[in-house]
Image (cartoon, rainbow, N blue to C red; front, top):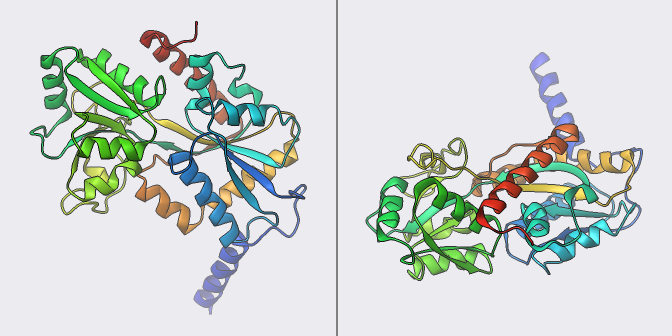
Length: 332
């Protein structure tokens, strides 16, 4: 009897978790615009559309969540749109590290403090990739060869200019003495294709944007730029899981970098309005769809909200300012 009661309680608790709340201090009264400050198909767009689908499937919100891409000005269009929607609780935005890099590089009149931080959903990893037909088996070997080749010889592919991928490339140069020709592309999918075609020699790309080519035996991961290995043990290829990829520090390359995936609201919203989205996103994180997405994309699943998230944002902004200053990327 006791075991049956426990099982029934667990079922009831699970149903309650995914059901729309019977009562909330505040909830949206019209469709919510979910701004993506990037183009379609990229990591931010994929995350926003996954959240949208999870909310619909599990009936987590009565009003629709409508994804709108506003990618102009390296994301500035989307951020300024949210900044200017003061007091509007029917608009949220998914952010990545262009939250810091775009205003620092362009001088656009925007700062993350111009919005209301809701929660950090995850951190996106970066991996150093080479073509699988190259002889390099470790990051140390590849970067030693890149250094020996000298300036103007080795091409590093990445997404965008003066954004995360190029900042990470500059960090690699500082850590190793290698000098790369940085080649920008529009998105991570194109970056992976260019490496398969040997138009660049290496890339710093997110796991989810190169996993298909890795699984096909076309690309080889050398190291991950997180401070610890990815925790995922299921095999992606016949022989390797994400967790088998060493950190760059393990490989003798003392540099690390992860990218924010967070949710913000416009300025001037109430505490009750913000709490609705904090609670909503916690429910999203508990769904099997979200957990599957986290593993397939090899995300760092760090979560934050409240003061901890605010403090993290301040430190991350300062870190980006220092990296971009060293690279000469700050707006004049």
